[in-house]
Image 1 (tube, rainbow, N blue to C red):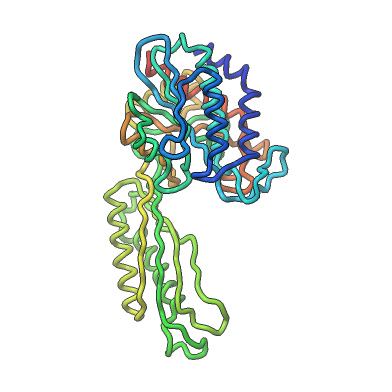
Image 2: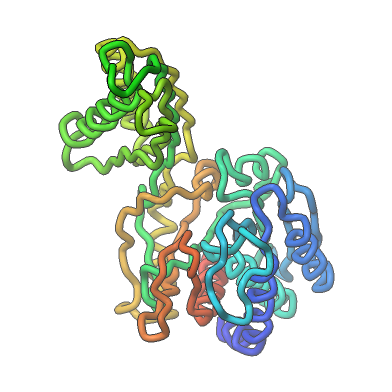
Length: 389
């Protein structure tokens, strides 16, 4: 393990350079053409067996170790978000309205660093490493599903991944057995009322009023219909209606998300939402459409691999820096890999209050403490080596 750690230290400046280049040249989900080419070219340079266009823009690299043993997959996501970068640093995004606001540029650079060092130390590997560079994590159903369908996990025995996480301080790592990240569903409700004059509301069916009642009643699902100790979120993210102060809005559109940790509760919430929307609209004489899109499944870590995380993390960073992760209501399509292979998804602290790195993920001034990439590389290769031992 020491040789790998030393190798990461030696190429750290190169990893930072890759990350900053990718940060300046972000690409949205399903548009990661240059990023995928950048990754594939480096992997070929280091002698890996490379597959491109795996399930879309995915790239898979295979490094065969010198010894016979299991095959371990390590995953990084590559896509950016439709957010304008508001940072003033030298590596701010050069693409208008697009930025890496979630750390995927650093995930990609970390995995490239592992691939480079591992290719130089492959005689130390008692098995094989598969590098999964995944497209389209920020969308539903996500690139993981299509990559798996294209054979990305063939021959793989276990799979590990990390998310650099600014809410947690650099130097600390987090994971837990069982459910850790939620299923992120999306819904759209379109309410059809009857337009009219603002001064004559009795002649109209006010879609804004109906929509407001829908919003209020949907909140009763979490507060009164779900077990209080069962994590659940129902949030309305947008409500669009109307065009003038004196016109009753004929239509309203509500868009939002549901977050749950079990498929049973996921189905129950969807069904209850449908009943509420139907009853409220019927009561006020409006019609509606209710579109519900299931997101990724919850991220559920294998208990044995979560125990491996505790062991490896303590060896690398000390017991005081290894923590059980809280439940996180964000979603992650790494969950698909865990449906097919045992593994563990882990958070690596990337925040630094003293350096002003405090902005949350998906924020226009999002950044990371780049030292977190070293910790992520050590943790991922540590998990792989321990599995192969």
